[in-house]
Length: 204
Image (cartoon, rainbow, N blue to C red; front, side):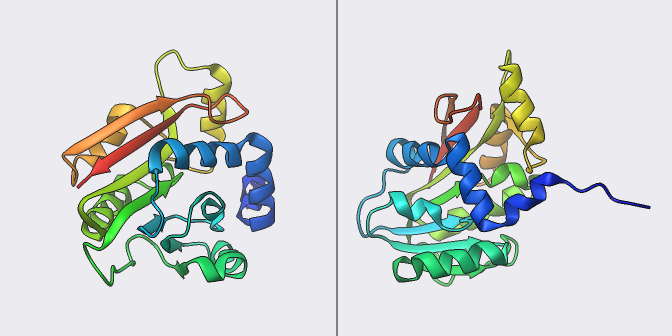
């Protein structure tokens, strides 16, 4: 039995992933995400779940940064490029252990939840909750299905490597397992291509 090659697999190569992100407006989207939602203050302690090759650091001030990702290629690229700006660990969300619970000001999970099933997503919210200080914030950002969606946007979501793109209510329900204070916003202007996203702020 032969297996058909999935061209999306090449996005695991850090250089190709970064180039693709620039082409579709991913860098612009990340900049706007940081400015409008994350709102980092210098020297805050940040946990970035699913950090990829660490590109978000291009848009952050000087912070105490820890990035985790399950892809060793991304982590190696991040270490080479940003070694003096943070710490990077190759691990899954289920295997990750917080060495200092309750010490992080902000947890970021950008483009992560739509790659995780419900059980894994609930685990992410648990890890984030335990990592955060009182009044700390988890900020998430993912593709999202909405009613009367632009057909091209819907197609891009269906072609995404993540198999768990959800609706606004479905994302919020997962967050509610550990966070009672959840605010979300639907966004369709960050990328250069038609693409519908949801940003959530979950406050401890």
